[in-house]
Image (cartoon, rainbow, N blue to C red; front, side, top):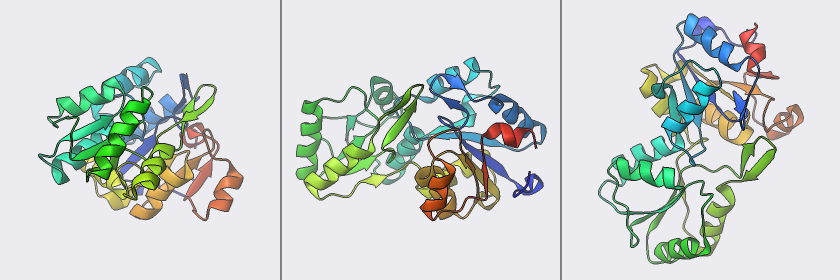
Length: 259
């Protein structure tokens, strides 16, 4: 592959929606690319900011699309946020804005969920209501910190994009003057967690994704190589205007698999 020497790659982080599938449709060549990584003995982990579902459901989706992977190959912004809370906010109570699956995953990790909480945790919440928004606002105004699983404005679907978490982060920040601690991509913390899970040096990793200001920015900020795929959100002209320079730009992961 021009631009990257795969003999010098310690591990690969791969975005999911827009990179290996889009909504419910697999991107051609994506399962075969994963098999090529396995043949080369290169560890990999799927990295997603979407916190509306848990790892088990992502695994079911990937297996159904023909990916031969395990749950250990998946790292979500929810998983990363749980690790952050247990390490840096251990013992504090949390008020959740998230889907039922998200809530279950947080509770199963042993994090104490409460209505009068120390931390407001904002995820991609397709069940959000005015009452819950207002409760979160009141808690932050009374001193609760604000944590968000990821910063994305839009979430890819089969038919386009849906509103994601970003506008809600800005809503709470503007109303309360409290800055959110955002855990997911582009926070380099996600890359470090991925390296730990693969047990590889982070300097040798490669990030593959379709978003400039999450996937590519994280790679840049973490000091690692990157592959921009044009199968999802960003177009080539968007990359050229962004000021962020990926190591490679390809149409899709199918181009990588065939090189």
